[in-house]
Length: 223
Image (cartoon, rainbow, N blue to C red; front, side, top):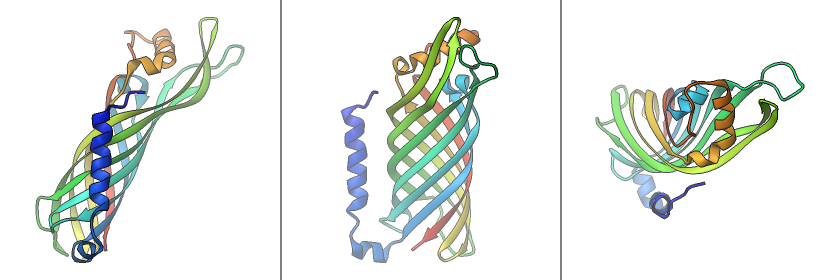
């Protein structure tokens, strides 16, 4: 696990800033609930061990002006991994599961003013932490039994953009594209690397920095 003090300080600062929005300000500026779901495509080292899978995200945004908002956002990416084979003495194939669970804080900015019955565009940037998880599964390398069970927390960051339509004063629908980077440590995924290299060529050194690109449809509710 590799967590830097700078990353922790940045994340906690953003959370405290979002929490400092006063009730009076909340009454004057919107609080926006955000939910979206779609498909995420892995890249970098992650693409070697995982295929595209579903992505689910929820968030809450606190308006500071009519165009600038603080943002808390959490999500899960559920990838299909490569076939790793059954444990020794068993037939069949075990398919690896690779999962990302994240919590981020940052900001969202409307490029165009949002108006009911009109189109809008926004951009966002966040930073926080992502849990890389490979649920426990067993396989073999040669004559050796190997158990893969990974759960590691890493700093992560993202940028993204949204284009949507305000169907009501309080309701938006939108199309969303994001890019995530997770700053991992290849030393934490030794068992996964060992199994992968037994079945594939060229060899994988381990999962270090990984990338993913979710594309989703979403709903925003303004309060």
